[in-house]
Structure formats: C-alpha cells, structure tokens
Length: 457
Figure (cartoon, rainbow, N blue to C red):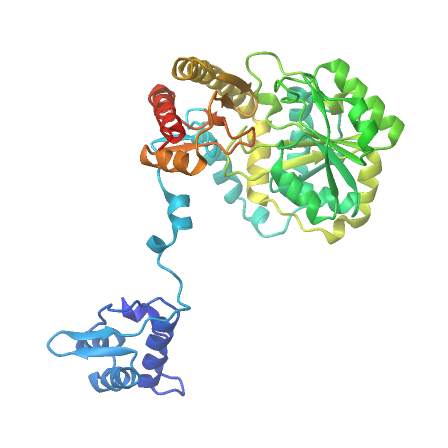
C-alpha cells in the first residue's frame, strides 16, 4: 500500500499535501516505488488517510508537474521516474540469486542433515532462556557466559581431552571472531605458518594484522619440525585431524615433535580442532593441547557439531595469554548472542549434546560410506581423499574440467559443490547436508557435469 510510504501528521506544521508529496517523492527516489507502478486513486488515498480529495489532488499535481508521476486518462496515476542510484531489484542481482537459489543436490557443506539434531529440544532450550526476562536485560559476560564456560570445560575435557579451567575459556561468535580477538593479543607483524589452502579465512585475518603468512612443508603425517626450523614462525596453525599429503590424522609422535619444537623456539601452536569430536570411523585422538597446555591455543566450534546458524566458537588460552587477555578484556565486546550461549550451556548440561553426537556419528558414518561407494562407481579412474571431520570427499580426476564450463554444467543440473583449493582437477563433495537418498543420483550428475566441462569444442 502506498500509505506505508507516507509519513503524515495532521497536527504537524507542514501542510498535509506537502507531507504526501514529500513521502511519495522520497519513495520514488530511493527505489521503493518503481517506474510504471500504479498509485492509489485520489479517492482511495483520501479515504485511507482520512483527508480531503483536494489535498491528495494537490500533492499528485505537484508530483506530475515535476515529472515524478504521470496521469494517464481513464487509467490513473503511475510512477514516471527511475533513479540510477535506486537499489536494484532482487531479480536483477546475480549475487542475490546465487545466495537464495535452491539446489536439488547440495554437496556444498553449507548445511547439516536435519536428522542429526533434535530441533525440538534445541528450541526448548532457547524458549527456556527467552522466558527468563532477567537474562535478556543485560549485556552478559564479555568473556562468555559463566554457565557456558563451565559446561564447555566439562564438554571439551570429555570429548577432546582438553585441559582447561573455565577461567581459561573465551567465547566468541564463531572461529573467525575468536581469531580476531587472539590476533589482537598476539600483536601485529607476526610470522605465522600454516598448511597451504587449509584455512583461507584465517589467512585473511592474519594479513589484516600485518602478519607474514608462510606455508610449511608436509609429509604424510603433517607439518615437519625441519620445515618449521627453516621458516622460524612465531605462530603455527594446525588442524591435526586432517593434515599432510594424504589428509590423515596427525599421529601422537608428530604432535610431540611439534610441541618440542615450539618449546625450544618460543613459538605458539594454534590448534584448530575443527569438528574433532565428530570422528566416527575411529575413536577421536586427544587434541594437541592435551599434551601441552603452556604453548597451545585451542580453538573449538559448534557450526557443524550443532547448527551452522548457531555462531558459537571458543578458545582455551594458555596462562601467559590469559594474563594478557585479562588486562584488556574490559575493552573488548562480546560478539556471541547471550541467548544462544545460555541455551547451549543448558543443552550441554542436560546431556542432550551426548545423544546428539552419537546420532551425528552414526548418520555421518553411513552417509560417508554411501558417498564413497557412489563416487568410486562414478569415477573409477579417480583418486580420493576423505576428510572425516570436515565431512567431505575430495575427488581427484584424471582430467581437468574447464572451470567456467563446469560451473554452468553444475548449475544446469541443480548441483552445488564445496569450494576446494586442491587443484584444477579436483572436486569436493560434502555429505553434511545432502539427504542420503539423493547421494547416488547427485554423484552421477556430478560425473556428467565434470565430463561435459572437460570436453574439447
């Protein structure tokens, strides 16, 4: 309704016709009213606003004189002007289309299987928090809600063998937010070493703080101490759950070698334990921080463990970094929702997370087997890299599809794949969100798209 755009005050000093004129003109100039849109008739608008028809006619006449609207005889008034600075319609924006488009076969990893989480139980926790008015009327703890930090201390110890006190835990709105906070503690201009292509978002953050980003060498067990000795970084970012030339779990012997190196050099380990608790084909190996609490900064997240929409991550600080944090934490705002923090604390304390993890491991184990079998059938000549904790399978093809042709071929088949930096001949298929019954058909369509994109014209 046009009246929604009109700000009219009958008791105001500005004449009513002028208020209508200004409101309609503003709506046209900012793009809310598009060219050729029909305006309400004089009679209808005067009735809606409770004013005389003469007042509306005077406003429309002024807009017509200035060229904003046009009076078409026996038809009515229409918007005549279109401003260049007006926002584009949603259907004119390719970015908006790509973000909102539905994909029949979604291997992107941007969602989780809705069978994994008991949404009713999660909503119950949220509702319980919302009903506690006193919890919603304050900012909360800048370090993270005490109840959540206490729950995380038990949870991380039980699932990942993390050694921590609740006081050493800092909560934030996801891993990236936590990394920004950590970099502010590390200071500017550091040298950080990581595996190439392992965590692109972290590289952006490091470079924002003026860090020199270095790439260490890997063998089948991950980063080597010899490589670190050559690079001499201040910080070493590792994901011990998926590392090395084969994407395997870093063995305990290699973890101890890296710990020994950082102790000698004075560097710090940043352990990105992405989905470490989701290992399902084998029992989860204790995290690196379990063996070294003094030189390891632990990172944990709930984006895939719980829900992607729940942006909660946390870090466990060694004592030296905790002292630095305590000096400045009054200057740092908490980025995570207090409501979600409190709900997660309740979810963990009520042991719902335990049932959740058991269910997730069972479902993802079955889906991983199905995807691997389908991929081997569709791509008999390919090589595969399976990332258990990140819930995806990399397919290394014996040919290179043309990237633009591949994108077009995938879109035509309503397919979306996971972004992957493993080479032009590699594809990544995540099984986290796609329904198990769609995996076989989806994998076959991926094969068709890849072969079509590799054909020579």
